[in-house]
Image (cartoon, rainbow, N blue to C red; front, side, top):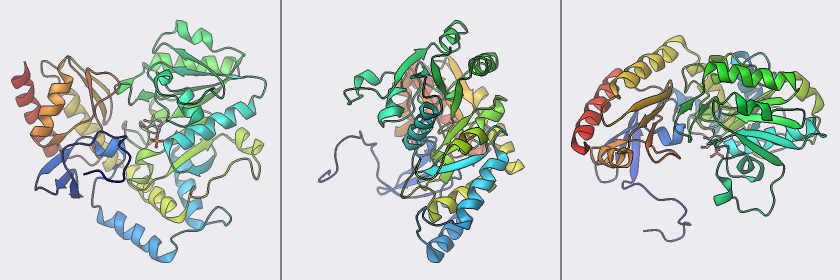
Length: 379
Ligand SMILES: Cc1ncc(COP(=O)(O)O)c(C=O)c1O
């Protein structure tokens, strides 16, 4: 089957032909409930007509212009993002992916604190596969691929207040996913996140919130930082930000923005018209009260309904959910046999759910019923 593509991905056992709402339809006639959302990307579900009409209009009007010109649609997208973000961030720099967003955030942090060469990250964090982003990703020694790392990195234990003592005057920045995605949909304790933020303040360390996976309403609030009531110096976004159109962003504080000048950052495609139109549409949609209410409603049903033996724990926030079980691999495979797609995580015993944020109560019921069947079969 594979002729020219590099074989770097283990493919699932179906080929999608089209998708609608929360369902993927395969070439061989399967109808698959997507509890994985294309790695947390399809925030508005599939086939949203208003969204495709909006994007089509943008395609017809102006498919592309680079950052050499000012674009009203780019301005509109950034204004909407900043209006919903914590008031600690003030300006947006658009890029194309999560890794690129983190790469730029780390570069900015080290430039802002040129006498400090260290970045603190969290065990089990994932921040991307480019040089700096990979350096702050847990377990990178297995696949890093570069001879040297661009800065010193110290990984601290999750939720350990003792570990916070590593945040001192030598540290330029701390990067954290407030809810870790690949690390098993792991939601940090509120008290830990607050203490980490305080440590950063005490030592004038920049706080970078990587909301690439947990942001854009995935955890029940447009910004996960608002859920935890923290005020990061930078926030990175991607995945659900464009609802399927590739786009990433770095949101920075006023102080950082004023230290950046022409030529300091750049990206050919970053914030192009189509990407900006997607951000503008998605941002308007996800801030809607009823949209957010749906997330908390279906999240509560999943959190309660998925705790079926041999699942021993259900963790996470909103629609970033981890199901912990020694039988995780078998449950995942059997769910797919029954036409339900779920994700894995860096923990072999943890399944990840990242469905479209438009998931309905009826779809949750179908999922839970099927999960119960599967759990009964494996235990
Ligand atoms: C929290 C987080 N940050 C960064 C990334 C990297 O994003 P991308 O794959 O768009 O480069 C990911 C991807 O899974 C992620 O989950």
